[in-house]
Length: 316
Image (tube, rainbow, N blue to C red; front, side, top):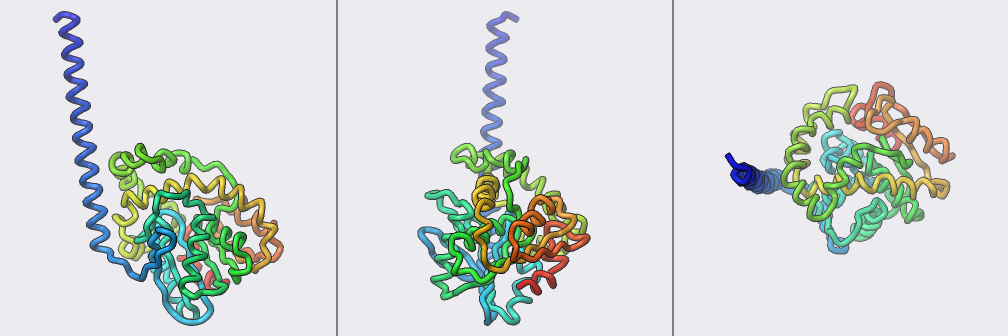
């Protein structure tokens, strides 16, 4: 076989492989889009919507009394507070509002802005005004704590107190944020979210959730209430990636202002949290905010509000 024949054969094989890869990617993208539509059909909105500056925000409201706003973290949706029982238990004597942050659950995430914690806080602040909510107690979990802190720092007279659970408060290098950063990019990220990342997210979701609940088992009600496929939709994968990318700069900006806090702050953390280091974040924040109270729950991990919901409710 001559050299030209060998090159021609190699070229044809490369072309076939490229064509096969493109076809497989297209089929995967169609399957992912179909799974997302199916998940949304099978999980209709549980609450109501408020339109804020082009974003359609989904929220659940229950109970009467002093207002409490619940802000969830990454990976999950407002249904996390359903599964943990916090919404129903707090609604006994509070007006409870739990929101899907932009891009999570049934809330949209327009691409006309950077959805930093401060931007999310501004949107929530406006949403609360529309709903007639004044000076709520804000409960934030994980990434939701940065949004809660942004609300308290940017709108100090409109927040009654903070309950911060398993929070990330100071800039610290996170490998997960670096790995997911490309998924947040336009075009490249869009392709990834419908192909390779959609598949890898499905492969890793169980392990990710198990790490969140470690050292305990994932509660039986967790996945049925939250829905795996709702958490794996391309929109929510993008929201997760963008929020992860904003974590370090947001923590850097907000940590320089913690001395401005004048409201009561309760910091709740699990002693065995493998997602966020308790000493580097929760204990440090407690030292820097004199009027704060620190509750470290022994034998609890990142999802401490499941194991120690009584402590969270007592803090509220």
